[in-house]
Image (cartoon, rainbow, N blue to C red):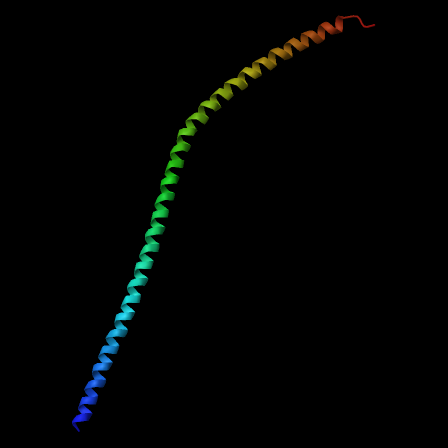
Length: 107
């Protein structure tokens, strides 16, 4: 009868050791998965930070260029006004020349 107790104790000890080994392996796999996810999240956050910095740099460059564009637009408007004056003067000169050409005898 004593041998039954020793067998039960051995089975219990083996079950305890087997359960501990199984739990340890599952914990190790869980830890590796957690580290992999943490690494992926860290990499994604770094990429996001780089993209945010690039966007901020692009926005700063756009703001700086907007003043240049405004100055160029102002120069363009001045040139267009000058062109309008020159067109008016050319139109008046042409009408005078047309009048003179009407007075010229034709052959």
